[in-house]
Image (cartoon, rainbow over the protein chains, first blue to last red):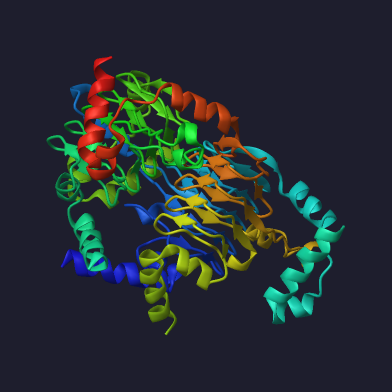
Length: 176
Length: 176
Length: 176
């Protein structure tokens, strides 16, 4: 029984990750985009994802500290627990394979680099990355840098025929 | 054939991760808890996990150095191999998505933070984390810190109705 | 439809990872070895893997910057895109669970340690690791170190009966 349920969950998760997340209790905002499977942990109802936020593939949201098991055998610590909400603002991008730890609040318009473990709050408009994640730059600087190095390309053809236009744009860059 | 076997392994792994680990040769102690799938590598018989130890989801145990392939083409290095036992003590917690490398010994009552890559031995009673993992604090300090910040809650109701009690406890924290 | 295709891809990917990678457009050299599933991303045709290169399990190759979505809502940045080829040389080893970011070129005979996030080019013959990946040592030093610490073992028996010979070699090391 449990196994059949898990298999169906596995399939549904991949078919429509946002719908699946909402179904298990994640508070996902409007126009979210979750790319491929995420691990929402054992308390998905402690997780809030803002509007227009993208969560890339294979991210994990951990809302309790399982390591308390190590200390609970001592009488003094036997009732120690640690849970924490995870709150991600609007218009963020959470990079692939990131892990977000209990109690973390990420502001609006933030970027978390791929493979990060986020252990602290991230203020609005900042790019963080690493294990543990640290400040890298502001989103403003990130944007300006991309803008200054933006490849020349045909926007219309990019939307019609991405592969052709991407290959052309990289060829052009190569020649410079 | 190989594929059907792999599929059945995949299912069994998820159904009872400890039983599966033992079946393929992992020396898993009493009262271990393995949460979800782990990657036990190609020499599971080199891995020992102590009693009462929890391994969280998606951990990988690598017991040989595959990078030797890069140097084996030179005559001098053609027979170079590196294997190493992985030994984890009693009452440890290995955080989600950690990777443990060949030859590593982790003591008793240790905590490895989520997303770590453990390349060195960890002495008894220490919390390590990062890529590569480094000392963060003692388990004693970790325990005292959690104890000092322990939320007020109804232990009995927590066990009967976790969600309700967790939400209450976080609401209370919020007000402080 | 999409789901059945995905399931078949999932199976084929595991059956023959190199064949699968080539089928979706990865330019994989002769005698490559891809161990288990990799994530080749949305532009596999931007990825080149040299001859005799090993990619260990669960590596991800990211050839575009998805975080641009965060800034595209501003008129100024609405057409910003960032794509980048990933080129890995001959005779490399990419450690398990590594993530390679857009635009990265890795030279020949390089080693990337497990769990790395590679954000910069790696010159020929170097070992890099970490998040973000940094220089650790030369492959020459890596090779010499392994050579100096090479266990005594019976090469023939190792190929005939790996488990027996590995256990013997570790027992011998233990006694020293």
